[in-house]
Length: 306
Image (cartoon, rainbow, N blue to C red; front, side):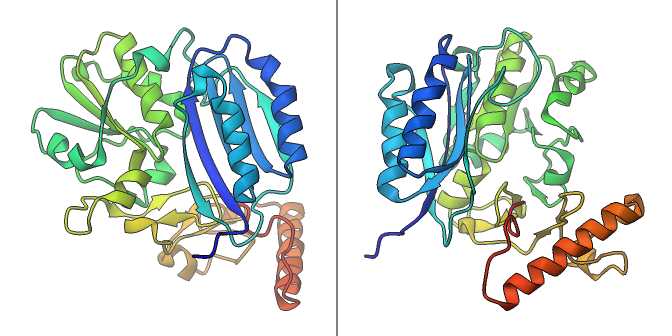
């Protein structure tokens, strides 16, 4: 079996890292020595990243992280990449590895109960369970589980305010899910910090569910937005039908692309009326360069970057 020459690895781990700033320099040095590119976020609450390189180099970076006992249980998901998806390596120090804006949360100890994808259907079939999609509105718009509550947030940091507006959830069993697991771990920690007793979240997120649950048992409807060049995936993580608007960054379905307000690489029905002449000209020139690069069989820098 041929080994992929380039792989991408996505990972996160909530852990107590008061010395996280000290980890930046040696981690960046290793990534650069190994020619690994991507972004890694470090915070007092843990680590979150997506990196790419040869399998040996990527796994060397993951081994370095796991050498810290606090990150020994770090899990990652890797996939082959036809070409390097990132142009540089960044290791950033942050207040949070996923921004919710609520001080004092400790997802490493406060998160709700993990539910394996194989057991998820049974949980959400319970009529006493309230199912909450913790993703943003543009993600929910292209797919979700049936009957899931959509908080209609524009950013993850709006979730605490939404929770305050829904006191009727108190005393309920709440099951939460997100793309890969990181947002629902933090969301369930938020609920538990506010006195919710029965809180669950989908282990590995929607992606693990789509990857492991059979087509016959699959309850997911639509596609799942992902933050890479695939834009969206379906069952078995097969590439979906959505593309990305290069102006407003929203996923576009067939109906969006059929609209007279859609211009490839420039705008879509959502943002068509928001572009000034300078922005439109810049996007048009960028699209012209992308088309020329494709005609030459080359890759325009950033052409597939979502």
